[in-house]
Length: 90
Image 1 (cartoon, rainbow, N blue to C red):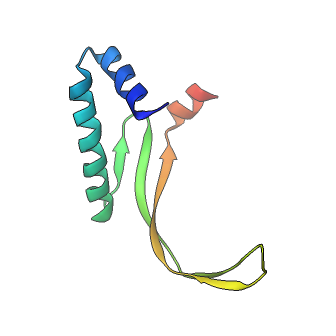
Image 2 (image 1 turned 180 degrees about the vertical axis):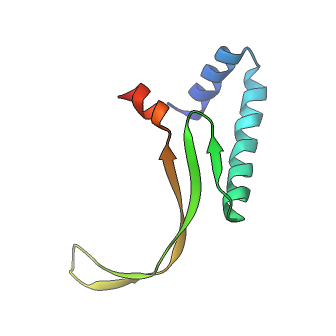
């Protein structure tokens, strides 16, 4: 599903305009990024939980050449789906 398809589906489901839904989705992305950057988690009711996790620096191997490379530490986003959504999809 593309962003435009998501906006249309939410607009149809809620009766709101596509412009309003698009604005909310844009704001959601900005708020999620700011919240995760500050170290807090976000729970999206009925969907799941987003959290930021630190990944330590490590050594990896290039599969083509076999050479060892250093992968720097970084912060990644983790998502844990709710049981209700997992059961609905299954």
